[in-house]
Length: 393
Image (cartoon, rainbow, N blue to C red; front, side, top):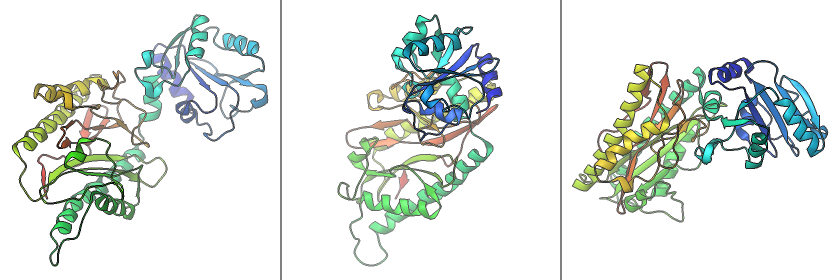
């Protein structure tokens, strides 16, 4: 926990403080920011208030009064609900505008951890409860130099694995001698997984390999018992992600598409070009904003990509957000590129990473083109290879 940085951020945001509240680990965001043990035995409510200036304050139950001892600040104790209420009132006495893990209308549900009853009680004390969404991004999603370097390690390994993966499909379907054996989506998943393990990478679920109509399902997961054969003439989508197996490492996450043993149809080419252009529109929107030193919010990048797809007549087939934050978790705690599933008003901050991955999912096939972007002050860039044409396998 960096108290000085937190108080500077609170002052810059015009806030009187940041109130952390937990019970039975219902707020993992707060635990991570405060550096608390995610496996600690928590059976009673605790509160930790970081004021914009001055000493932090704690309110803990008497039978778990050591719960916040690792943090700086004064301590108040309660047992009864009456003491809890009076303790909160005293803790927040000189503060009015307070950030919590809360989102108005649950618009940014990723940070909406505070329950309605607690917010209602605090409002009854005359407090204005505002969202901590941008604060969470600053203290959870901003990456260190080592974390950025770990993303680069994953990027180089996965870009090379995917390039070889296309060749693996071709070799399996057209062996130099003998009759080709059955080769499935799951066989390719296993090959990609082994290749990533050999590079010291770890990941969650996946990767995803899907052909034809299976690629229309953006979260399709082939298994040994439920998968399709990869054949000549198929349309193939590969979504692959991983990070180095070291604490604090950051994911790299990409999606490419290709056709097996043929040229793409006119329909496939049109859809791919539309998705590619939408991806590039979002990239340009972000790049231009950072170059000009202008703030940009997640929904604005989504709008840029979605407009291209909508204008091409495929709007109804773009059924998910344009991108997600990437950090130690594949779907990280920072701003997402989203004005569909949520209206994400969080800022895209310097030294953060996120995907740009528009898609069009028709009944017969689906196209997604996913890259990752990294930002710094005055600059934003794509971290790996960029697909410009459908892969010919």
